[in-house]
Image 1 (cartoon, one colour):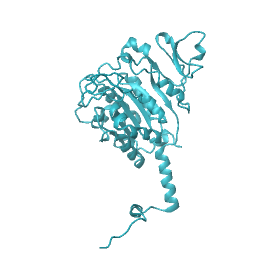
Image 2 (spheres, rainbow, N blue to C red):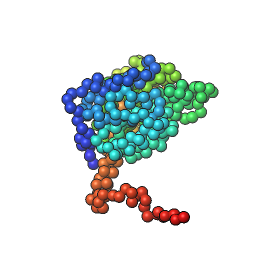
Image 3 (cartoon, helix red, strand yellow):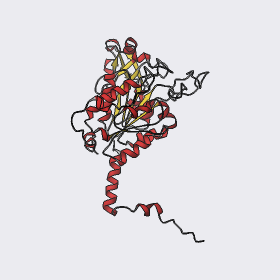
Image 4 (cartoon, rainbow, N blue to C red):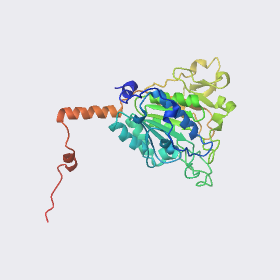
Length: 352
């Protein structure tokens, strides 16, 4: 199975050194002032030169929504496609053009509502593409209706008495679909966001990155507990592979597994329970613990929210498997006859 370096070797390298400026398009950025999308755009534009790839061989595919204007602002190839279908279009592109680095930009409404099936099947196939899922827990483009990640009881224009829908946890959903790489980060934490993007780019196969993104017009402050300096210290669980899962002031809190139920829980670290603190293993072949970690984030308060890479494991990459299969077919049978394939044997002539 090819690793990330081997897959990147298929994409032509840039001639000369690149900078952030090389990845800025000439289009006026048109998001609401203060939108979290600006921070993500700047982070991506600043990170792209690290790949060292020819920008003509980098493609951004989006669906519909505020986040989906992203391809306009990247000086790469791109496609502003149709609602929820970006993963499917990107799958076709990645499998037919292995010389491209393919990125998907989508939102919680775009990816998890009409696009739900397209997302989970891209994840289970493990196509070599990177999916950035902007989650602001609201429909921003259409002016503030509740979305698949809005908390229970959310009052919006479309739910004036409060949402009755239990919200999706995108990270849990991705892990349930057997995604080989799953991470979460926050729009305003540039350093952490960039480190997660770097890890996603290095991963062979589908990488899903959920980005908590503030919509300051229709859902302002949705992630304030994770952004306020004092509150975040007690709420944010920063995951690092190979390190004990501890957080809070002086790392006073930790995550342990309940010996009876197998569930994870947050405890105050003492001498008695210190040996029980979990060590994060992002490379564990089983997604069980990663899924349990994802469930620590309460959908209402977001207290005890893990961020970082929850899972990064190697699985066969769909594009490579398909390429090998096509090479084997050509070797065994020669080049195919497309017209004959389309016609098949079940044809007839109408005489009249």
